[in-house]
Amino acid sequence: MALIFSVSGVRGIVGSELTPEVAAAVGRAFGSFLGGGRVVLGRDTRRSGPTMRDGVARGLRAGGCTVLDVGVASTPGTALMVRKVGADGGVVITASHNPPEYNGIKLLSGQGWTLPAEEAERVRRIWQEGQFGGQPIEDAGSPEPLGGVHEEHVSATLQIVDAAAIAKRRLRVVLDSINGAGCVGTAILLDRLGCELVHINSEPNGEFAHMPEPIAENLDQLYQAVERERADVGFAQDPDADRLVVVDESGTFIGEEYTLPLAAQPVLSERPGPMATNLSTSRLIDEVAGRVGCTVYRTPVGEAHVAQEMMVRGCVFGGEGNGGVIDPRVVPVRDSFVAIALMCQLITSSGKSVSELVAELPRYAMVKRKFPCDAVRAARVLAAVREGFAGGRINEADGVRVDLAEGWVHVRASNTEPIMRIIAEADNEEQALRLIDRAERIAAEVG
Ligand code: MG
Image 1 (cartoon, protein in one colour):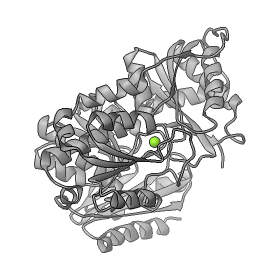
Image 2 (cartoon, rainbow, N blue to C red; image 1 turned 60 degrees about the vertical axis):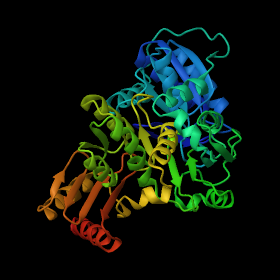
Image 3 (cartoon, rainbow, N blue to C red; image 1 turned 30 degrees about the vertical axis):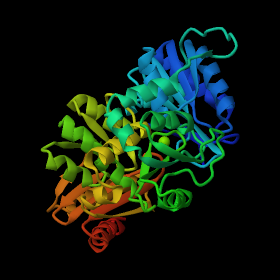
Image 4 (cartoon, rainbow, N blue to C red; image 1 turned 30 degrees about the horizontal axis):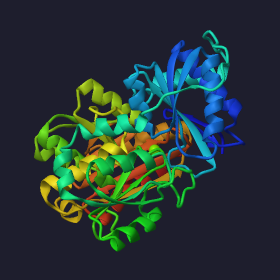
């Protein structure tokens, strides 16, 4: 494995690929890119967090920036503080859902967005070419602490729901925070929403009790706790608390693709308007938006693309099918706090259980595959796929997505590895497999 520099920043294994020196160089490149100013710095709970923070802070100061340290904080919380104090940028030390031996550096713009692809590329070039600029700020010890991240994030989140009504419902909630950055703030949020909280993996100590990606196979503890505690709902966050997945009242995982369409419902029913999501996200969201006459804009994969589209189109809501929802009223990045508050709102205002809410939506089958493919071959594969599916509605904003009556298939090259990803969704698994097989056959015929 090599150090990965993508739109979402740098990620790698601490000690081998990602060292304090690398962290300092990336910090310095970002400081140079910003041309000085103030940068808010947060981190998730990984053990390597403090060392990485010191490296990044040293680099930022060498690049001419003043560093405001919010301490352990979620990605959305850190982004919120960037906007709150009018900083010039933000950095989150996190490898998101990667295993504990990893860490990473995620860059945020002064608007609190994930840095757009072209700007991330400029930072990468400054770093790799060593063309640092900026007036170094003399190392004056530790970065300046900036308090209040959890309070600020919770109070902004409470503004978008009817907290008093939710509190009356006394929802019983099990939350798995994976001992990550969501532990402290999310407990405050659920308390303000009057929920009875059973909090598992609730110590912000970076000891991940299971593989940290919030997907079906990693959440057994949560399923059992929801059942045992007779809870109304179960939530799981990832280590930097930007993604959220939901478990119904029987302790059954409903699927990460349901977070966005469920969370969107209370928003769209109150303030109908356009939405944005990426091309690989389930068409469940088209169903939900379509019921209230709202448009869904599709973007290339990557949070920055969704956030940018939301800004350009004036979207009221957006996100990704991996459990990332974005409400621009709170902060323009994926936010598990927002997802939790909106789920509580939906359960309360509908008077329905989570399983009943899920049953109101279609059950689609999604199948994902990948195969090795370098950039040269990728271009030929995509051209062949476009031709092979010529009868469908084609979107080429990111690889090739084909919409057909029976479903859709999306073929795209990964941003971080020499692989091609194929995702298909249809009314049932058989149809989805047929679509994915057809795409794979086309790819296989390309030399
Ligand atoms: Mg994450």
